[in-house]
Image 1 (tube, rainbow, N blue to C red):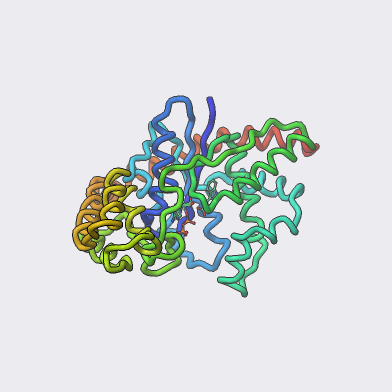
Image 2: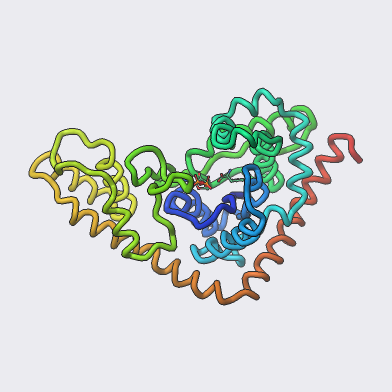
Length: 324
Ligand code: ADP
Ligand code: TRP
């Protein structure tokens, strides 16, 4: 069966960008019986930038709870924490032997993070894409549901797969990104993408209707009439399409060009539509927070299932590389 792998770093509560760009794709593939799905919390990737130990300890569990609340199902998917499968690190090391420093230094994600934390340009950060390739290829996954910003990393995984197959005769697939309609969710500020690291850019999955309304109200808009749809207005229209459908967007855009639109109504309806999608997730989350034993069991059993597959791949690669 074809395999799928994805992960999200343990940096806090998920937002709509994570949900629409990654989690929705994860859910879709979980429900497709052609695929065997592996979904992890990328806790080892979380320590590539400065972090606090207790915060990480909490967040690596919170993401598992977010996954379960959003509908990932341990009966259908292997749900686990990356650090519980140390084979990822071993395969990452083996992969680093065929990866040049120059290549890693030129990735936009590396440059951005070094800019953010100039005093923290570590080996782990440089190695980020190599470990990510190991995450994917250790399960021989051919499909990776992640947002558009992850494309350069998936490209590195393809290059590593190709190189390993050529040099050592392995049979790694060249993984492709699985894109969702929300593969690039814009920032509420009207500029760039929604991101945890940009204050005022995001709606969290745990936000109340009031919080959503107040955040959506802040999307910058104009007089409500014009010929060109750009900036905050375009952002608003994209959200309308994602939560209320293409037709609604077209009708508002038509009104914008003719009679004009009233943003207060559009924003009110949109906030309601967003909350309608999040409410059941929030209810499940509240239940899961109480059920410590269940969450512990999911984490334990997920690690066991993942390790079984991961061990096989590492054994094969060790043999092919002359380490057995
Ligand atoms: P952030 O940028 O908020 O720190 P992460 O880098 O932790 O988010 O991303 C986790 C997952 O969510 C990745 O698959 C990423 O592609 C996806 N993602 C993050 N932000 C967005 C967005 N604005 N639109 C679509 N997908 C996103
Ligand atoms: N780099 C991803 C992010 O920032 C997280 C991640 C780590 C990942 N390993 C992965 C995603 C493997 C997909 C597959 O969100």
